[in-house]
Image 1 (cartoon, rainbow, N blue to C red):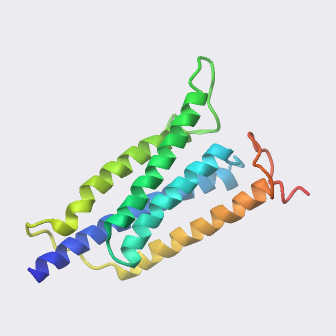
Image 2: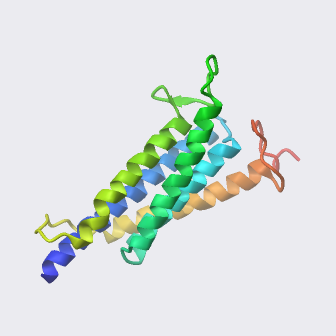
Image 3: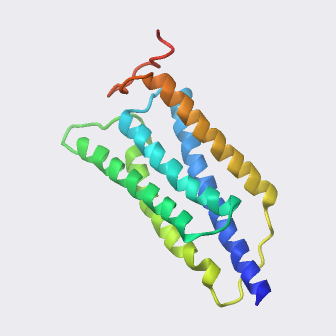
Length: 187
């Protein structure tokens, strides 16, 4: 029975690792467009990033501490926040003739991707939450302490990067609706 519990925990940890990597890749793509293509995120985009960071923190806590439903709750709340903000931004650009805000990725705007990702992440959590309670024998996955550490450090670095870039972009005041420059760097 102990071996079974260990296999379930390994599978759950691996799934949390994949969730954290997925969110980190999303944030890296956002940074690529921000830094390489010089597309500063709007206030709603920044709030979507906050929601994704909250969701990522739930995966991070599951990896670094122990798997708890409270951490999965953080993921779900982060996804709900991201989804609501993304839906709001979609509704702002739904009128005929409106080309939307910012670039597209595979023909879809990033706020639409944020909504889709949020729904998919909630479904992912619904599938992986019961992994610790499964009663059948599961495949034996290798332990990935090194990979977990790298993924965790990357995510923490992305949180810090988002904080710094937001402060540089918005300064001490309200962020511009259509940001064109970093406020703190242009003074």
